[in-house]
Amino acid sequence: YAKKQGKDTFEYYDEKLSEDVHDQLVIEQALKQAVQKNELYLNYQAQYDLNTKKTKSFEALVRWNNDKLGFVSPATFIPIAEDTGLIVPIGEFIFKKACEDFMKLKQIDTTLEYIAINISSVQFRSADFLNNVKTIIEEIGIKPSQIELELTERYIMDFGEDSIKLLNELKLLGFKMSIDDFGTGYSSMSYLSKLPVETIKIDKAFIDYIPKNNNNLQITKAIIALSKSLGYRTVAEGIEYPEQEDVLSDLGCDIGQGYFYARPQSFEDIKNSLIL
Ligand code: C2E
Ligand code: MG
Ligand code: MG
Ligand code: MG
Image 1: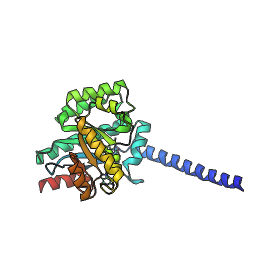
Image 2: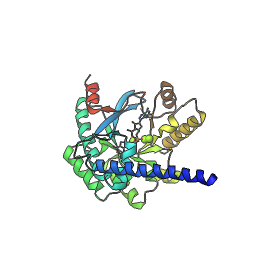
Image 3: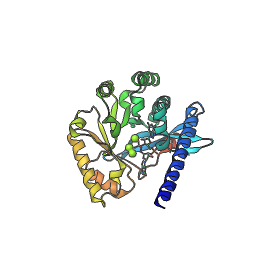
Image 4: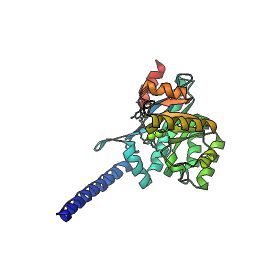
């Protein structure tokens, strides 16, 4: 009986597995044409200065609407784009579009400081990344200091010498750089202090339920203190309630992002909100 049950269990997982592989292939095929078919676009989420109480920047977040698959979350398709290398042309599209849109927004609100753009490690490590970025910003006339590149902690810790060299080059050119999803990776403190970044973005997982959840509160406190002592700016992501803003403000967190301020919105909506 036990054996039979074991076998059923096995068959269940087996079916689930091939279903996943099938989904993966379907997504991959559709993703190959997504850029040309104009199915990818960007949403923007406000980054709110906790001192001045003003929006100082936006984070670009990619969206994909396919005629057969409907809306597919970036959490689903970005990893597939990374596995297949499709992230390189997709990432280039995102970078260019985000820079163009920022320049348009900056004309409406001259106080905007920069645009935050997520960069996949696969894209970052691709041979032409630096040259592509340089060409695009020259074409558009945006300054490197008006761009913050978000790289996740998980990937940064896997970076070798070459990647650190590239980070240094980008910093020399004037780009801002931030460590996204901080706290979910495994940074060693000594490594962290050597990274040429200027911003640490605390992962939503630690911002959730503060101040009520004391573990999260203590971790958030420690990250902000560490970030400050190393001279970095701190961004908190996933703020949903005023209580969270209150503590983060008291702890000296610089920037807040989350549904409490604004959901990611279309370019048109952002533009209209700035005109009003
Ligand atoms: P991320 O860069 O850490 O982005 C934050 C995610 O949290 C976004 O999800 C955002 O919509 C969501 N979020 C923001 N505030 C709140 C909140 O208050 N509550 C909740 N529940 N969620 C909030 P999204 O847009 O689905 O993106 C998920 C992840 O996909 C991103 O995490 C990023 O790693 C990746 N991603 C998104 N856009 C891009 C892109 O253009 N390029 C690359 N390489 N990756 C991207
Ligand atoms: Mg991000
Ligand atoms: Mg994040
Ligand atoms: Mg996150």
